[in-house]
Length: 164
Image (cartoon, rainbow, N blue to C red; front, side, top):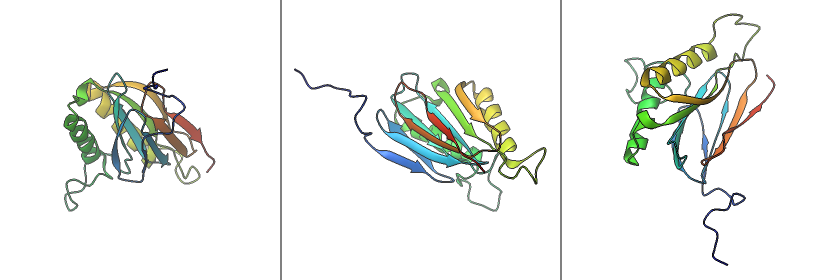
């Protein structure tokens, strides 16, 4: 019997755990993971789900002028880094599809209305819409933290909610 080319039960090729400000590239079989509170994570993937980039955004918008311009804890530099990684693989970011997670209110007793998580989510939604990138799935808001795991491939990312 010929050796199987793809085994859905096989261990991932690589596990990449993202921390605040991280941006990572994964290929089919690689697992991308992060833990989110008010931060958001955008995952961009080609339509065939063979390559993906994931980020862990802490702050919406651009980095302040007194910080490095490539500070990927901020949304704009993180998205630019994601685009650069995709282009390095020969993939047009504008043809990708996205998942969006996080943006929780981690201090609901202090912030009844607007909060950092809401601002992060709104920025990501607007940026993806302006770029014409289709949102495949989204789990944002609320008061729980989220643990995101995705093995790059045909399935959707796994989201586990925790208690604050």
